[in-house]
Image (tube, rainbow, N blue to C red; front, side):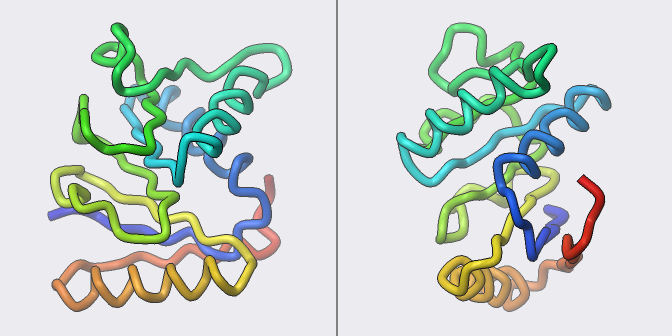
Amino acid sequence: MTRIEFFFNVEDKLQKIAELCDSAVRKGRRLMVYSADVESTARLEHYLWSSPAIGFTPHCRSDHALAEVTPIIVDCRGEKLVHDDVLVNLQSQYPPFFSRFRRLIEIVGLDEADRSAARERYRFYRDRGYEIKLLDQTGAAM
């Protein structure tokens, strides 16, 4: 069964995603970021190309020729799923394909619209019997 974690009270979602991506690469894991739309996908890709300042996080989109061997996939469509390790959801709805992944991470910011949508996703997962781990990021060291 998919392990589900909610990181909530996240001040800077891009930074949190970059941390998760870096951790996944260091641990030899594969991670797919299911971004909200094409614009947010482009912003995230730019962030990953420039962070850290002396390097970058290896990533590509799911339709890229090297997607099968790239540790981080950034995608907003969810049409081509190239692995089933870790999924980070940035969409307001639950990903319809989340259960094929070993782990699902939900990132919840500080604004009320984001929190409200996250509560709906939380209820959806809980009502289907998933155990959910909550990780409060208030004051978390960045």
